[in-house]
Image (spheres, rainbow, N blue to C red):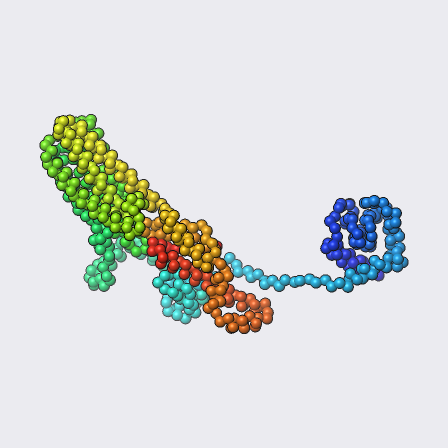
Length: 569
């Protein structure tokens, strides 16, 4: 009897608790030993655990367990005591309470249960659905191409621009095949170690292998077309550099003879200047030939920066070899002056040098004008931005050579008129200062290019507008466009794609009626999961295709953009 009564009380108390949480007014004050105290009209209140629910009509009073009452509001003598209330409930005088409780119990309670798909634990090294290319399968798992013929082949979108699709394999299939071929993971590990040792030996003997390959080609003939490296020196910057090497080499020879004959400090500075120009332009030719090398795994973006590296070294060489020796010889001439012999031959050689240096300077100017016009830049912008470092070096060196010839001729003329050798030494210092200025400019511009500077704001704005005008793009963030040198730009951006447009692009390629039938056949959670997984993967593939389309559009409309990295936000 007592357990049943206790269970009934607990059930009534729980139902009244639900009712109070939805209907009761905020609590006014908490009282020790009681569940709640509140002021309300016609609301049930839950008393301590050893009390029955009491319906208060006007004002709430709290009763202690000893029967004493504590008034929380104004006194109302018409309110019955706890004993009277219990008697009324027991004798039937509290019939209205019982009727209200019975009507409340008849109201249905609706509980909405949310169906949640059980989370699948994949583990830290889940590779069951990973794809792997045939090259990686052969290299990493020590398989043969014939072993891959027996595996499942999957066509996927190609990451390369020259092909649309390529074949991949499931990594789980490749791993199983490797264990089947080698028998155990230990045997596979031993084979990998053996091949790694052979690769190290091959790299150590790379020079010998290249020499043997060269001898093989010379004996059997080279069936491949000749490299286009030699053709680079018959046009553009290569042509300018080769012309400068020939002219500056001749100038150095004749200036050296004039210095030996006259002993002029200015003529010595001119000879050193021509020698520095010849060496630096030979270095530029090496940079041009190296920049034409094709990219390899160690240098995936190619060797175009070799031109900037060669120009940077050239600037340092001009400063140390040209400016340094000219300053040294000029200072020594001031400290220890000596008379100068006949300057007639020196004037003749300077005149010939002025003509030859001027011709080389004219070739460099014409090349820069043509290239600047093709890029839509002014002559000054093209030079300052160091768009073509090799031509820039030739231009500045020849310009400095023409000015230094004029300075040397002027100082030598003053020495001839006055007989004072100090003018000649001052001319040597002037030539050294001019070379130091040119070298400082070359070092600065080529260092900026090697650091990876940003492209012009106007060009960056055009690329940004092209992306934002596409319907599939909602916004782009963290845009970076770096000039990699030689008119090659690398573009990177965080793209916020519109999922609705991507999904619609996928749906436009589907049979809507068949898709509707698939939806109508979904009856269970397992069928729903299979349906969502199938079309979810296809939508992700559609998103990847949209990324490829945007990258292709950027490259087509902006030929300078060679590498595009669009990251999904």
